[in-house]
Amino acid sequence: MPVKPQPYDLGDEITIEARFANAADVLTDPAAVQVQLRCPDGAVINWTTGQLTHPGTGIYQRVYVIANGAGRYRVTSPAVGGVTIVGRNSFQVRDPD
Image (tube, rainbow, N blue to C red):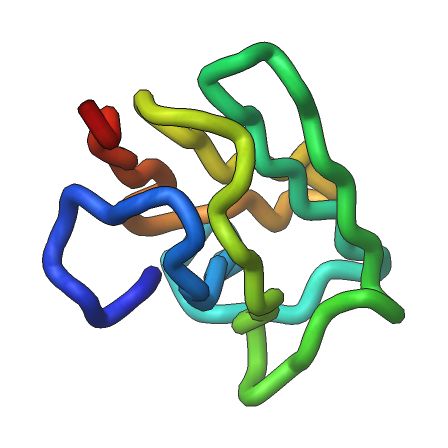
């Protein structure tokens, strides 16, 4: 997840990170990756393997500029082949008012 302390502001550029692990909690690359960002306004942004960077085993990232309003954002991913997303998977964006 991003390094800047939360809450974030609209327009901030952050790095969304999804980490995947197997049942033994070992970082593992899934056969296919889909990462979803669920925004507080109801929008869902989807990224697949080719749209993400892959800095290490089981780690996928995407730079994102916050533009969908204030509230809680959630990072999710469907489980594939016994590999699930792990770690802190949400962040807060403050209301500009």
